[in-house]
Image 1: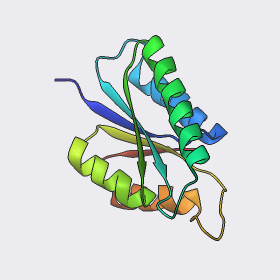
Image 2 (image 1 turned 30 degrees about the vertical axis):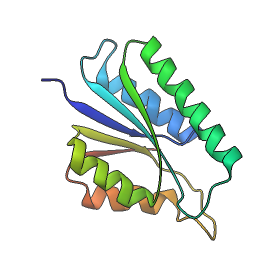
Image 3 (image 1 turned 90 degrees about the vertical axis):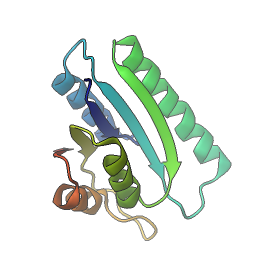
Image 4 (image 1 turned 135 degrees about the horizontal axis):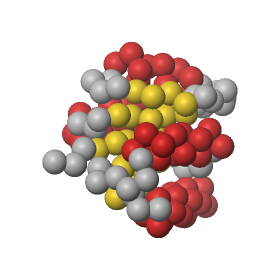
Amino acid sequence: MPEKYILAFDGTPGSEKAAHRTREIMGPHPADELLVVWVLPADGVSPDRRAEAKERLRDKVKELVHLGYRAQGILTEGDVVETLMNMITFHEPKLLVIARSDYESAHHPAIDSVADELARNAPCPVLIVT
């Protein structure tokens, strides 16, 4: 039975590195499924930002499919940790891959804290790409 992998993706250079690392782990012709998840903040995202995220996610999934991966894109809104934990619980992936970043603002927690919290609490292995 094919396994699932979850890649947390947000279009940043770090998430591009995480996507590359995920491909290395899965190998060149995987039978497993790759869920590429982009979580937008729940505190109001402009329609332009949502459209840009949707387009970039679609492009990443199209690239992965072209390379032979069974990839599916999921664009959602909410708390990143809560959303990814719910996806992990539902999909029971073999691995979650997430990038570590120094991004932080008054409205968004540092990705580092997101990656650290997921590494501590996820019921599956978490690979943090730096």
